[in-house]
Length: 248
Ligand SMILES: CC(C)(COP(=O)(O)OP(=O)(O)OC[C@H]1O[C@@H](n2cnc3c(N)ncnc32)[C@H](O)[C@@H]1OP(=O)(O)O)[C@@H](O)C(=O)NCCC(=O)NCCS
Image 1 (cartoon, helix red, strand yellow):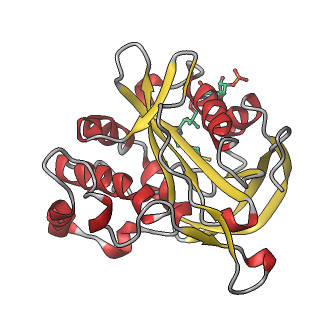
Image 2 (spheres, protein in one colour; image 1 turned 180 degrees about the vertical axis):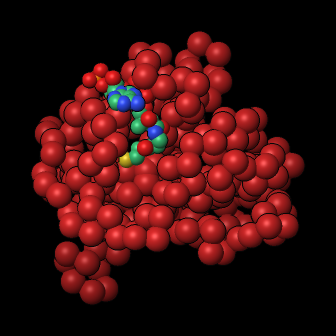
C-alpha cells in the first residue's frame, strides 16, 4: 500500500503474524451470516469513540471517530463502498500480485477461505477504530475492482494515511488515480483531519503517478522507513493538505 502498503498495514496490524493456515476462517463467528459486523453493542470498540489527542496533552481527547458515511462516496466511474463477501474474487485476483501480499495482510495467491478472512478483517476496520476500508467499485455495476483505505491511527493529530490497489486486469485505465482523488475528497469530510500521507517506493512509478494525478505533493524521501519483504526500504513521502474549511 501506501503508507508502505496498499491496504491495511498502516492500521497497525500484520495479520501474517496473528493468523495462519486453518485459523483463517475461524473468526467467522465474529460476523453475522450476512457478512456484516455484529451490532454495535457486541463490539469491543464501537463507532463514535474519541481519539487520543497527544498534541494537546495527556488525558485530553481529540476528534470523535467519524461514523461510516451515510451515502457512499461517488465520483466519475467509481463508488467507494464497504467490502463485502462477494468481493472475495477481487481479493483473490489482488493476491496474485506479489507486492500486494508483501505490503498488506492478504496472503499471496489467496484461497477462497483466505480471501474471505481478509474481507472479514476489512469489515472490522471501522468498528475497531482503525479507519475506513473501502472496496473500489464500478458505479455502473457495483463490481469491485480494487481496495483502498483511509487509516486514522493519528486522527488525534489531524493526520491520516491512505493506501490503494487495483486488480491487475483493470490497471492502467485511470482507476487508481480516480479512486485516490475520491478517497481524499472523502477524507476532508472527516472533522479534524488536515493531512493525508502516502508512502511509496521509488520504483513504483504507477503509484507515484497515481499520487500526483490525485493532487498529492512529493515532500521527500524517508530513508529506510518501512519494513517490506524483510528489509527496511526507503519510502517517498507524498501528502495532500486540506485547503478549505481548515480544521482548527
Ligand atoms: C499502483 C496501482 C494502484 C496503480 O493502479 P492503476 O489503476 O493502474 O493506476 P492508473 O491507471 O490511475 O495510472 C496511474 C499512472 O500510472 C501509470 N502506470 C500504470 N501502470 C504503470 C506501470 N506498470 N508502469 C508505469 N506506469 C504505470 C499510468 O500511465 C498513469 O500515469 P499517467 O497519468 O502519467 O498516464 C496498481 O498498479 C496496483 O494496484 N499496484 C499494486 C499495489 C500498489 O503498489 N499500491 C500502491 C502502493 S503505494
